[in-house]
Image (cartoon, rainbow, N blue to C red; front, side, top):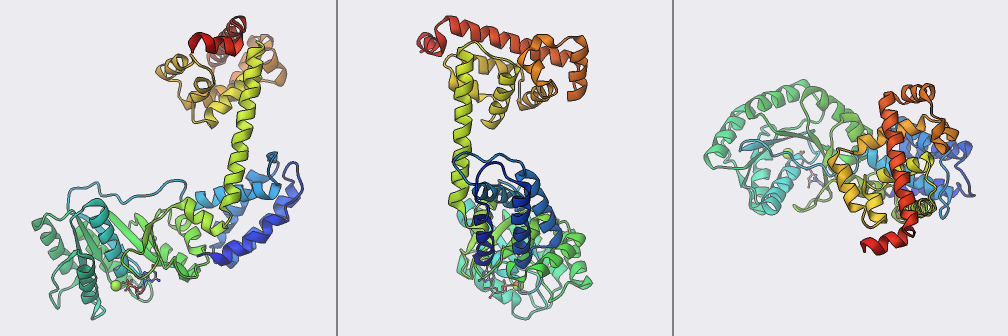
Length: 445
Ligand code: GDP
Ligand code: MG
């Protein structure tokens, strides 16, 4: 899967050898090739542009972690941006929060995999979530379409609406709603008709069905092998109906990965499922990070860079602990610490480092010291000069006003930060008196 894109990207980063900070020219050279690789993989041009711009911006000037090469570090940045473009680090789920029968309407062009995906998702809901599911085919254009869904229903053990010849899609939708209510069905899957091309009749039919069934989810099914075409199709559908998500089919084929990358950006809707074959269980919940990994094909480098970054954080924390022990703790240190708190998922850092600080952490949490406060404090300290940070006594009334203005806060907020720093350095001195962290550990341990 996605071999070609990952092959194309593969060579790019090898050229970023050497060490030190990421140099602008090196990054730009690498990005030129990333750009070509993405375009060749049929990713939509605006998506490519934004992607490259964001990676460039993040990469230039970033200092390279000690145990990795610049190339490896750029791989990580590209990987993160791929995940972001694919929808972020979340796994979108089907929204079934409505009174039953919850309707899921499947739309898309003929041959995109609507009927197959309808049956696959129904099977998932039945087997994995214990839902009572019914499927109905509204495809009256192709003679065998309704029959096809019936066969898949028998295969998967999902009920299908009995076929009545000669009915229009809206009539079938009405009948399906009634039957689903009568039979206390949890989820009703509507498989709509497709055309070979987007046309107004198709759109009107879809809208009429949506008006009757008020779907909770309207999933656009697109064939990932069609690349740029898939993007055009997605744009047309998104302009006509309220899509809630995308199903990308044929991800098992020789897809270049372009459709997956473009789809989220173009529709603004999450990719919820990926079809990976013709069999009824060949469907996966769409995991952006896994797909990014497959596109890039460099998962081991990514985790190596993550570990290196983690190690640096630990070193910094140890360095800070040493300074605290020595009773040196200026606003520069406070800022480092605020950053670490954010990196380490909020206010957990001190608590983890020093025994007895669990109480302090609880008190901070109780006083509503959430991460937004951390960010504001960091902005305040960031608006001070280096000298002021090293020697807070310099901060007279005039300087405080400047800092408040610079950080978009009030002088009283600046005072709060200074007060907190005072309290903390007092505590640090206490700790020193008690024999440093070890002494403290002995006391609380
Ligand atoms: P529809 O016209 O949109 O309803 O498309 P169908 O569901 O009838 O699918 C058309 C063809 O694509 C069928 O032969 C399916 O077996 C095949 N197909 C659908 N999804 C996938 C997929 O994820 N991978 C592969 N390899 N084939 C698929
Ligand atoms: Mg069909």
